[in-house]
Every structure is written in structure tokens, then in C-alpha cells.
Amino acid sequence: MSADSPRVLLVEDNPDDEELTIGALKRASLTSPVEVARDGQAAVDYLFGTAQQAAQHLPVLIVLDLKLPRVNGLEILKRIRADERTRRLPVVILTSSTEDGDVFNGYELGANGYVCKPVQFDDYTRAVGQLGVYWLVINEPAPPAGDYDIGTDNA
Image 1 (tube, helix red, strand yellow):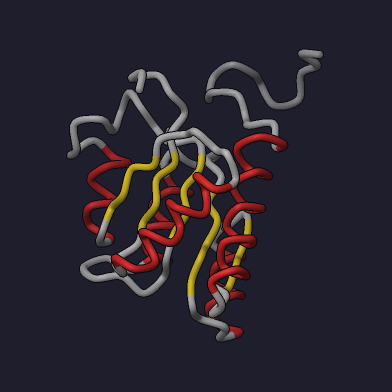
Image 2 (cartoon, rainbow, N blue to C red; image 1 turned 60 degrees about the vertical axis):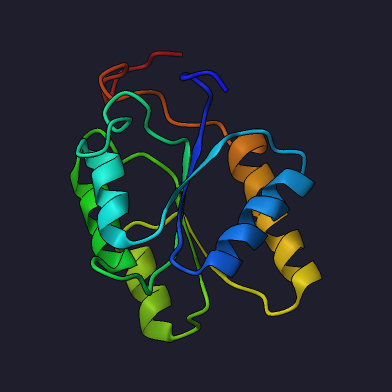
């Protein structure tokens, strides 16, 4: 894997869900490496420079659970959207919570998507595979900050 390979950051504390998610991305023929943060603080460290890779190798997609030890998913999302380096990164919440407040707060804080973890294996695999294909293949990512000025025509 090249240091410049576009990578996914999976923020997930449940080892079974971690394995299912990574497997689903592979089954969808997605080759982006997946970095895993197993608690909220590890995700913050990865994204904001305490971890080695942070500043130079931001992920192209963050798949974020909400119920995490140390720092919860909504707090991580707030930090992502507050920082110039990370505010444009796609963040998809993948969680077991169907609570209206979690869905509302996720979108209010800037999530690009909210997916409730399906219970059945095939449904989970299909949902995560589709999520990966959309964000890693179909979607056109935002250019790096500073490449364009808002309000000018760079087409």
C-alpha cells in the first residue's frame, strides 16, 4: 500500500462490526486501505496530528460510529467540521442508533449520511458495500482547501 493511497478511517469500537465493515468493503471490490480507530480519542489523534499519519494522510472517507469510548461520535464530528483541514471530508455515521435525536444531531453537525447498521449479515454487507461504492467510486471529492476561492469561476 502506497503512503498516498486514498484511505478510509473507520471509527468503531465493536470488533465484530469492524470485521463486518472491512469485509463488506472488500466484497464490494473496494481496495482503499481501511485505518481503524477503536475509540473516539484514537480518531481525534489520527485526524488532528497526535497520530503519526494525521496531517499528511487524511482519509477520503470517515465511517463513524456514535457510541464510542472516551470521545463520542458527535463530538468527533463537531471537531471535524470545525477544522479547516477536515471540514470537507465526507463523514458517514454508521451506527445502531435509530433515535431521532441522534439522526437530527448527526445531520445538524454536518454528517454527509446516516446509516443504521442492519442486523442481518447480507443486509449489512450490502449497505456498507453501497456506501463504499458511492463515496469511494461515484462521488467526486472536494478539492483540497485553498485550491479555490468561493465566488470565483474556476471551471
